[in-house]
Image (tube, rainbow, N blue to C red; front, side, top):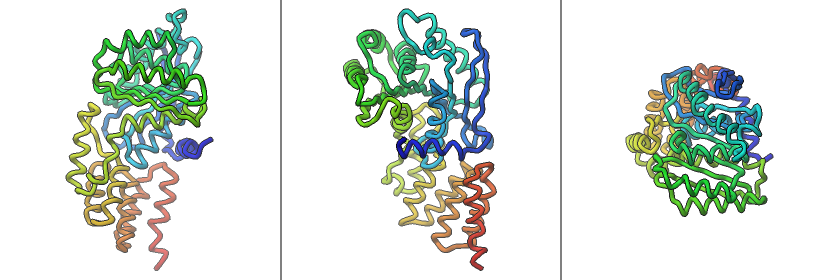
Length: 364
């Protein structure tokens, strides 16, 4: 298993215990109970914010990786907003995601379940902002095809992995894609390069480039050294980075100061059709850049961050670190102590900040 895969998976063990939960909902369309697994953002219970949702097909395989990736990219570096992650484990995978003409009655019901029952349940029971992403791997990517082509604005973004197209899907997409005017949607497709799927991947890419669906931003990536199993996780990681690429604030903007940082993230509202909140990780990363030449402005930025994320252990800890670098040990101790108090049930953060809050006391 690759190093970054181990890193993402390991993060699941550091999440607060309340962050993941399982729910059982009854589907009238499928005439059965369905298990879903949900990860809420770490700060969900401490604010009234609304969040986008990542729906993960093959939830028994892909949910943990997706949940860890979202946590890593949003919390650690601020490269994307926090999301609610919903895993959809299979009961009868062949029935639900086997998109074939002779199986239409089965997979069509599953698609309708996602649209009419599952998404409604999530929107009614959790604070969602209307920005929805669908992930599908291998055969489950065909479910993704169907939504992209037949109900294109139900999901704002699609991540597909381990897939390509043959003659039937090419004909289907050629007929359906030109019909639609997308609403600033995203499509990411990542496929292994050591398999016949690579040929289908290239055909898919060429088709989309030729049609050039209006307002659909897309990226196709052939992962030459990866296997079919590798791309299950790699495409989630790369797909989310592509969708939220604008969250990577350029150093040149950061160096212009706090006002320009605020303006940059405010301008993203129209890109994603929801109110963008500057992520915790973006405050920490930007403060690190500013600190090199303007330490007081780094402090001002972190304090502004705390006005938006008052319960963030990481931002309190970042302020403690800045003060420690400035040899202001009293202020450093104050903010490390606050970081410890805000650590909630995140054991790794609690142990770290408990030590740091006592570090200078031990020197006396």
